[in-house]
Image 1 (cartoon, one colour):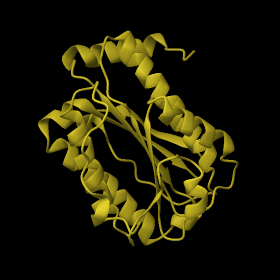
Image 2: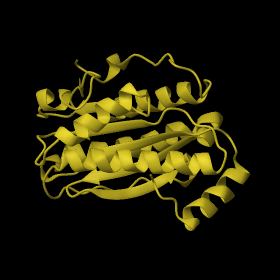
Image 3: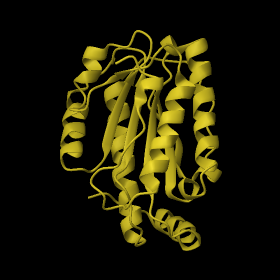
Image 4: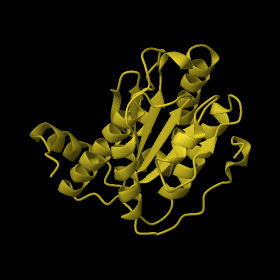
Amino acid sequence: MTEISIEQTAFGGLAFADNPEPRCACVLVLDNSGSMAGHKITHLNEGVRYFKEELLSDSLAAKRVEVAVVSFGPVTERHEFANPADFFPPELEPEGDTPMGAACRKAIEMVEARKSVYRVNGISFYRPWIILMTDGDPTDSISEAAGLIKAGEASKKFAFFAIGVDDANMTRLAELSSRPARKLRGTSFKEFFLWLSSSMKSVSQSSPTADTVALPSPDGWTSL
């Protein structure tokens, strides 16, 4: 069972009292390993900032979407869940290796903890999204993470999307989820985050109990 601290509940209660809208949690699991150095990390940082701006441009998404960031190289919680106005995109710098499995497990833990906070405060919520972006091979085991992801998706606890960048091992990424991994076209980070923000807007405008939501086509950013 996930433990909820008094501080967590009190903070959540204050925020939810001012904004009792249902929430859609989105965790960005971002590779900042050494191989992301150069234009890739630059475009990634720009894309996350653009994601915030796009969410803020939609009044409903600005109230309902919550964003958190986990980076890996090493695994670090860079930002706790926050509405777009209170989300301050971290400036990622390349370092370390690619502990992808541990990063995915961390994201799942954060999602489950956040859902517990919603429940304690009587806030309804949409199925959370976990977005993994990486350009490499995992340097740790991904078998446990893959099991958790597939079980979580099967039970509709969250939706998981794996996005490969540059020379990412798409075969290994495909092992993580029953949902096909997607390959980013070049450095189309901005186009990806435009798709993600549009998807979040679509989700936030639907009913929290809806089984399916029509999402925009990914054709603008992916080659798969």
